[in-house]
Image (tube, rainbow, N blue to C red; front, side, top):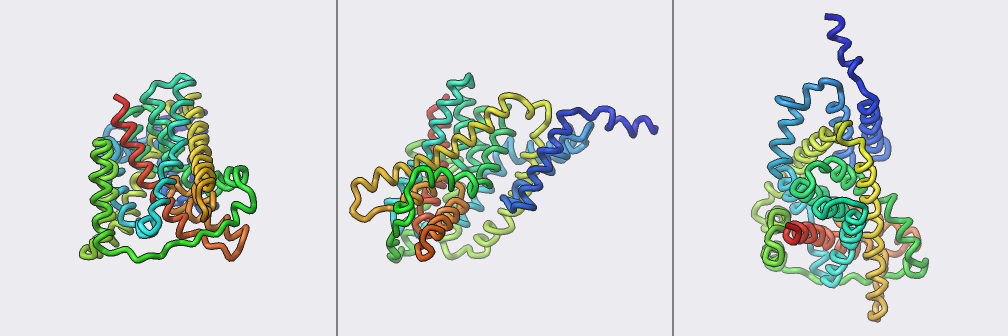
Length: 367
């Protein structure tokens, strides 16, 4: 009997110990650095629990495997998360300055650049698309595309997507400073605070779902839950459900999603050269997303009398609302009286739409 108790120790591998360390790092970043703790903490713990030798948490009857089959394979968790995110988003700043919608497209450049890079180094077209979608800076979109195109790489793609979202305050500032001058970062933006009617705010999510669905029918699985959540918010007749979606639903599903994704980080599958390449290319995707948004803003300024602060273009990635906060903070650092939060938020919610449409287009175009 004593020997049976030591079986776990004797079967512990170096790879599993490495995964314990990786899980510990994720937990450290969540607690000490406050980087997306609702996601990174359960992801880290899930990775540890799944790599314990003979763990009963994974495999037939394991609760983590059950959660995976019920929430990831069925795509239920990403759909529920999108409903919660939609209920959190206020599209009013974007409707007040609709031209900022362009940044939601420009800042998706990293997706397609990374996709081409992945294909060039030997990944298949579908795998390359799943790797490139890390640049969407949108966890649920990354999960859906990876699940359909590259299930074998679901763990590293999802971990990269959520980890880099948490690290946006570290990734974006150096790229922005490299591509802008101090004078450009000091540009003030007069935000148009025009009133938006309730009818417009209600029609917007409905029309976005219809238009995006017509352009890329497979994007409906992504855009419809997001817009449905927003419709709940803007309808004005489902206040309790809206608050539930923003709080209880978001917190519960995020918790389950995090620990379930963490449980897919099995040493044998995770500690491979391909995994390191995917994580590295995910960082490249975020960098080129940021660069694409900044450079597009600078290009637009060549034709505009009233200039756009190029930093706002970087907020066109989908990491909502972290990226908008980063841009606002950088603007205040250059000029304490400059207030960029609202235009940055507008670009950020545009990025949320842009990333979902980009994911839908990849699903539609790559057979």
